Length: 131
Image (tube, rainbow, N blue to C red; front, side, top):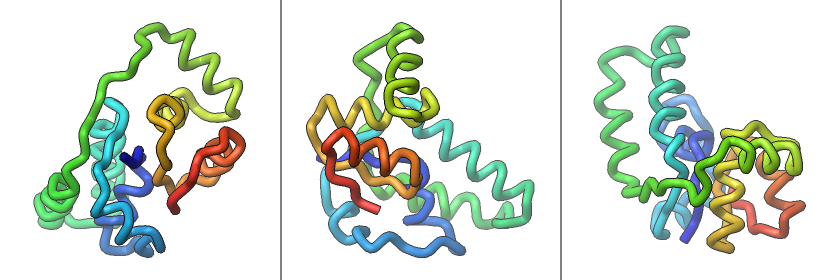
């Protein structure tokens, strides 16, 4: 199992992104992610449309590429905001990014991310990082 975040996912599918070095390993693994992931992907696509990074005609293909990754979206084990605030503060992350880190720590598996702060936090937590 590998936990994948939105930044890594977007690097796999966006036409103007450099593909991750670890792409072959990640796309053939079982992937899991946080429940915020679909919202982050949707927001990034919306922002990309608004900024002219992609065309409206590209969205269906990008969404299809994301869906082909077969990522298991799982509910967080904690439902109280305090848990994510504490994790964010402890790891110097946003609460959003802390959900990915918490999931990788729970599953004791690598984290696929292009986010520098999340990479650093995963490294400090002793997790393998795929970037």
